[in-house]
Length: 502
Ligand code: LR7
Ligand code: MN
Image 1 (tube, protein in one colour):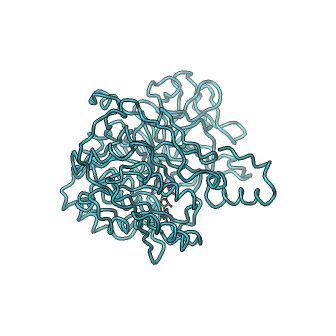
Image 2: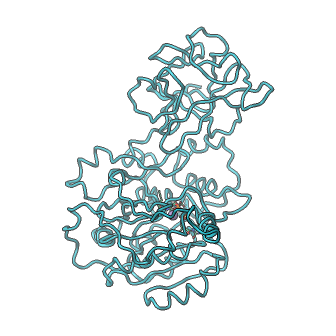
Image 3: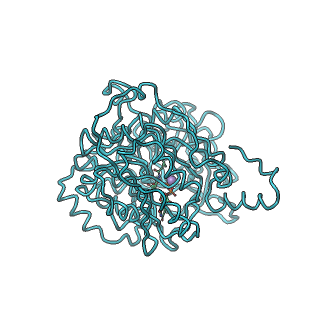
């Protein structure tokens, strides 16, 4: 639905704006739409005729929320009840994570009282999504747990293929294909990219998507067979309740948001389970560009959660994440109990996981040099008038979109100044490579074919672009980087923080 804001009355315009403000999606549009709207059947044709185990175990569907919009939450619940065989949904458990919006109190209780299968749980304090899910799981009475975010819509046939995989083997942990519900129009969008991508992560410990590798394409008989996935996005998945408990649920020391998805993904694989993306199950999710609700003040919860998972699961590989943080760890609490869990379950090593489950991931250990790249000459960088040590700087987002490389005062905190020189001659961060095609020096997705992405760190500490035989050079006004013929002048001399042979 497209709402033309300019045609709204002044009062309606206020509602429209505040809907966006408090949700980071178009609540106004959602409020105009049916709670039982029809969705397209986006499944591959082959999915519509697939046969599943005739006796599937029923599920408890757990939906956690903090200050969710009324119509969006209700549509999530109705989409579960409307599009699942009734015998397969034993209950829907709503966990209110200490919301303060009034519609989520009595009005929600009253509304849900009419839906026999729906239970509402409320905590005494703000727990964050991880502990909120633990509350839901602790009261669930069905053999299968299905977790959903509170702004989802399930499509026809979403549930059976998930349950079927768990019925097949209780250690299969399954995620649907997560389609996009547009944050503005609320349109359910089907994109073929979703059916060719699976979950990964980068060394910032952020979840990302990558292409299904050839070995998985070869292994499966059909394109709609479930795909093994190194990680999952985290919000939408199914797991046997018994297996969830056996595996140690979640780390209750994780707060608010983040990290739990990789933690559970690593744990599943390393402790004998299997994580799958089920291609015949489609659930929509409203992806938003910012988080609309309050987090904790004064602590970086994502960093804390990520350090907890790195400490317990990543063995010697945790250092690649810590380098990004410049080893500024802060207080991440006590992880002894989680380490004991890993021992008790006799889980495999992270090295095994990388080699067997995610061999596509670039491992920084294979880099020749890493860390900040500092010029010999001080720069006039970052709009500062005084001269300061100048470092190569660029943000590299998940998709390695085309950002120019700039010069910025060295800040010694990793982040946008953390680079790796790969054996293939790439200057890279995650999936982004420094690329020069004769114009601006940019970040471009790494293609592994040398070409415009091949650099040589020469004995005189210059960075030579092999294709053009030019060197990365500080501009003569000391404010930017450019490419010039290599002369070994000071403006062409760069120092990497670490070299592997040191
Ligand atoms: O303090 C909180 N308490 C909550 O109950 C914070 C959040 N929540 C609820 C919230 O209302 C929502 O239902 O938790 C759910 C997830 O929060 P979102 O929707 O703000 O997060 P997200 O969709 O950006 O987050 C993704 O990554 C998270 C990492 O911790 C969780 O794993 C989310 O479940 C996950 N969402 C998905 O996997 C959907 C697909 C997104 C992708 C990729
Ligand atoms: Mn979400």
